[in-house]
Length: 114
Ligand SMILES: C[C@H](O)[C@H](O)[C@H]1CNC2=NC(N)=NC(=O)C2=N1
Image 1 (cartoon, rainbow, N blue to C red):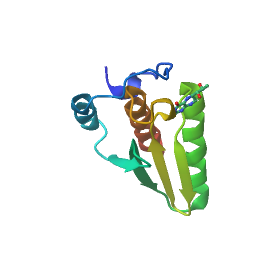
Image 2: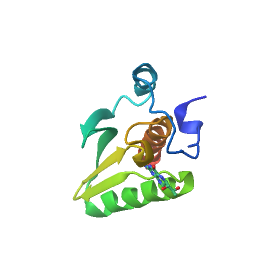
Image 3: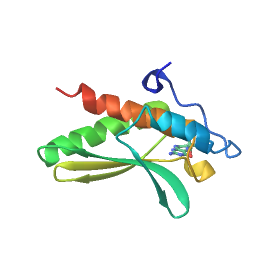
């Protein structure tokens, strides 16, 4: 089943970080995202472009709603015409399958806009 249709699982502190092999496979489904390391933690990051701040803020709130639904939350940087979304799993200090699911769902929100 495509990542976009999947849902986040409750993530436990002892959950394993995703393997490099699995991450490599899943990154193929979210080609617009880059994997970055910040404070020693692997994260997924993408910048979305908009025509103005109001559109950027509306998308920010949609991603916020997604996060609340999934119980999994990103870092969101909202600027004029841009939103930078960063997903990682705080509990395990790195990437979990949940982060790839949420990145794919974030793409779906962006693609669904009129
Ligand atoms: C209690 C609550 O469910 C947990 O703190 C959740 C909330 N959202 C979360 N979001 C992310 N990205 N990582 C977490 O470890 C996390 N934990």
